[in-house]
Image 1 (cartoon, one colour):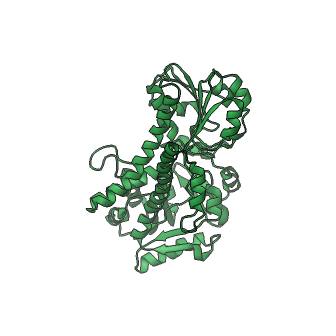
Image 2: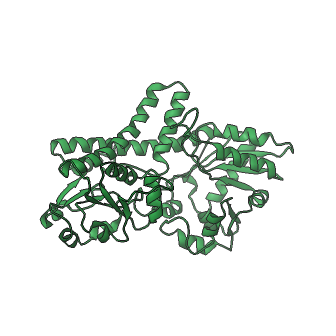
Image 3: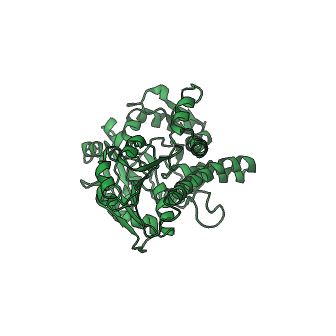
Length: 437
């Protein structure tokens, strides 16, 4: 919404949310989301044609186009628990729009949702008693956290799905015209509703599949003496494969990949495709295995016990350049180490200490074995091992000789992102290990 406001200064963009604290943060000098470049975009547009408000009814009443961008987490109850998307917030928004809208609206699905969700939204909107016409479009978001502003400035594609009738085509054209202010027309793809909804799930599933595929090979590399980075480079030179998403790591995280694959798994089961469902489910299982394998290797290498040993975990966000910790591999690593009675010290440059504690332990829970450091040097001081779990650039340039001097010997480094020079670390004296090496 901030990018639309910047690129179309004649369009008024209002972001509404019932969460008072969240809206207050968006109106402050300290935004609730860390994203490189976002701060400047928001400050340029806020108060001019970009507004943040808790007056949901007013926002709906005044808008021509309403983007629905609420959470669609994986259900943890009832039918489809652990796989299906929880659509309660989508339904709640649709009912609110139907209740307070005073004229025709274009409703745009921005949340990642299962195929055919638009059908439910249309039914709820169509049940309004005032005869108001609504058009429903699908416009999934393909930006990546950490590069979101650049992804929005220069997108690979913008996807808009709508119904192939007069009203649907007119609604699609209106949204196309918004994006066409800065996106070349040949990058704006229009499809039917169901193709658009499914494309988002499939895109994330394919990307996650590539990560799980190279991670499965990293286990084989460790067993045979091959180097997974060399293997990835060799196969990535094949133009049919390409180099992207072939970086072996401790595992993927974030709000989308696992949730969307599990949603795809549930859809395949629902439509009677068990073999297809099992295929995609294994992508998630491989990701879980990779995280467990990293923890197990650390424990095994430290003479089969980390009880009462200090382990420094560098990085807690699911990837660099974001403060998002959803499904972060670090959560699992910390829990595994705590289960082994290790003393775990976490450092992350953007994730607050209270969030680390809540993510690992749960709300209101404490564990004296888990603490958060203010600097990587503080985390590593006296540690038996360092585990690099997020690929923050600052971890590449730390003074590892200084860190080594303050650690019990033998001192270990486990690079879960393959960003460090293992040979140099070994020259210092570390016993250094990477994924797939």
